[in-house]
Length: 201
Image (cartoon, rainbow, N blue to C red; front, side, top):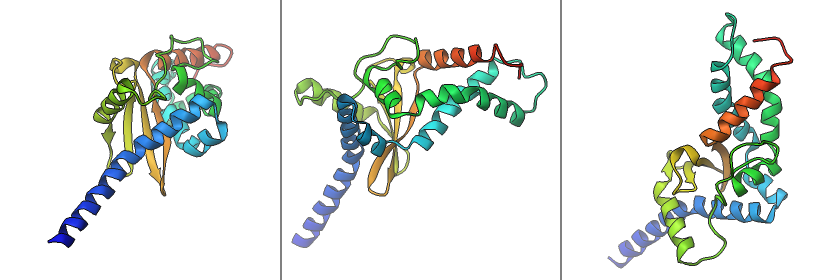
């Protein structure tokens, strides 16, 4: 009976540690953003996956606003990707991640006003713990290796960033950022403006 209790307790403890681990990684990333620690951010971000995540969001909406002149879906996507590459390159850097996750806007983009600090406050006061608890409650797991966390948790959905962390080995890494609607629209406008000097798709 005693061994059964011990084994059950250890299993529960391991499960609890695993459930908390992505939020510990998120807190560590927030500290790196606050310190503008590029090396630490680079370790915590999968930039290839992040690029794919942002491209999916922006490309579809961008193509809807364009006159495709009968181009097939694949050809239109390739042309759109070529136009969007300069915009995406601005987002796939440690500094861009710092900008987005620090105040909710890119310094290179004259977009909407920032939403304030997105991550947990540095302190451990009652407000910090309450915010951390709400962040945990509103998170969504996709199996055991991926979790999506809306930030800030109390903002309306259209103003939230949805951060996706994925377990790689023993490390949780940022693999996706679903942008809030105003910032996504601003980036699409920038891409559309870039086409004015190019032939139409």
